[in-house]
Image 1 (cartoon, one colour):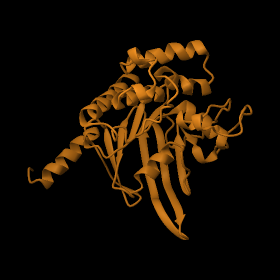
Image 2 (cartoon, helix red, strand yellow; image 1 turned 180 degrees about the vertical axis):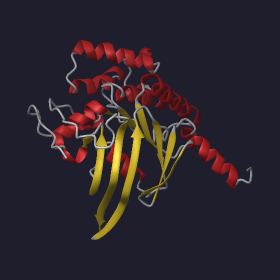
Image 3 (cartoon, one colour; image 1 turned 60 degrees about the horizontal axis):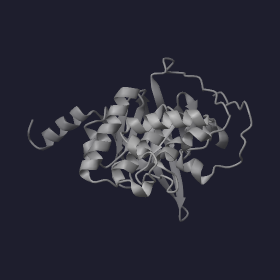
Image 4 (cartoon, one colour; image 1 turned 180 degrees about the horizontal axis):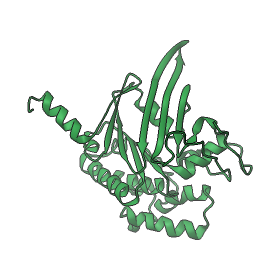
Length: 283
C-alpha cells in the first residue's frame, strides 16, 4: 500500500474545538490516493474491508466490529441501522475518520485512512466529508451564515468566496432570510438546515448524518429527510445516515442492518417492504 505523501507542513499542531465542530480542520497537506486494486473505475466512494474494532473495558476486550465489509457507491443514499450496542455508531465513525480500526481498512476515494497522519486525516475530513449531527453542533455566538462558512475558513477560501457560497447554501436550504440569526433564534428544524448547509460548504464527496431527525418532531423530521434526499439527487453527494427513524428508510437506496458488530444484511426499501409483508402474512 502506498504511503500518503505530505506536500507541505500544516500550520497548526492540534485540532481546535471549532475544527471538530466544523468537521475537521484544513491543512495545506495533500493526500496521495492508494492504488485502486479492484475498482479502477472509481465507482465506490467508500470501501470497508474486514474492519474490526476492539475496545478494552475493565480489562476485558469488547468487540464492537467483527470484520465488516461494505462498499458504498458514489451518489448513493444509504442508511445504517441497528439496535443500541450493535456497532452501528462505531462503523459510522470509522467511515467518517472519527475512529480508526483495530484491524482492516477503510478507503475514502481510494485513500486508506489508516495510512494518514493526524494532519492528513484532518485535511481529508475537511475536504471530502461533511458532518450533520443529531444535536446540530452549531456555534452559539455565530450567525447562521458564519456557522456555514466556518469550514470554508479552514479550507482556505477567501472572504468573498465564503460570503457568496454561504448565501447560496442558505438559499438552497430556504433560510436566506435567517442568515444573521444566531442558533438560539432558530427553531430545531432551522438549526438542522443550517447544519446541512454547513456540511455542504466544501463540496464533500460524502455527507455523514448521525441521527439527523433525532431531536426533531415528526413533521420537521420528515422535511429534513426530504431535503437530504433532494440534495442527494441534485448534487450527487453520497449520503450515509446512522438512524433509528423508519421514515428515513423509504428514501434510502439501501439499508445496512448491523447486529453484533457485523452487517447482518443489506437490502433495498422494496426488499424490506416485501420481507415485512411476508412476516405480516400478506404474501
